[in-house]
Length: 224
Image 1: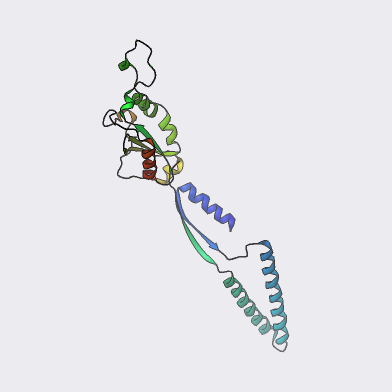
Image 2 (image 1 turned 180 degrees about the vertical axis):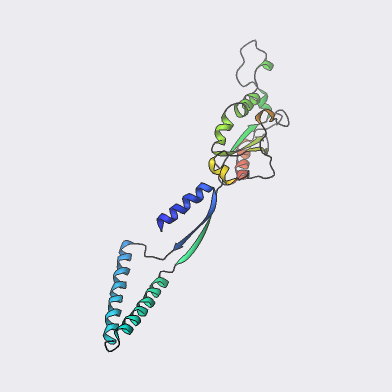
């Protein structure tokens, strides 16, 4: 029964979703309990057979055997009922793990990403926002994350905004299950070269802790 359960579980996992049916019995939970029940059942069976054969000595051999089989069948049925068999059905559904990326859009993101050398105009240096954009959209970060996770892009300053786009997981189970992103109202990610924020960094506050909690609440379960 255990081998059958594991086999069905593996098949369901391979397909991404499915149902699993198995019989559940109220067997004793300890080896000592199993031994005790087995010994008592065998002793009672031997006693019933001995008593029945003793009481039917005057009957025909055929009828003695037939009635004895019926008596044993009744005892076996009572034993099965005592173990309380139940057919249970479990529904197996695959949910891809999720990753959320927060991009700060406060005014501080306009500052240079690195200290500028003396005599260098600050406007010529790369801003923090531009550096963050390159890390997320021009590196291999998204592709690496998508190998195992569904990636959601958020922006924040004083308040959380998004997810703007959801990059679906490329995990084989996610592809086999054909599951779409959790938020059906949010469009799938466009090519990275077309991704643009609605405005330049202009927020007056950077409430990282509050917005991180808000993002976690919005992403919900299965968060990586």
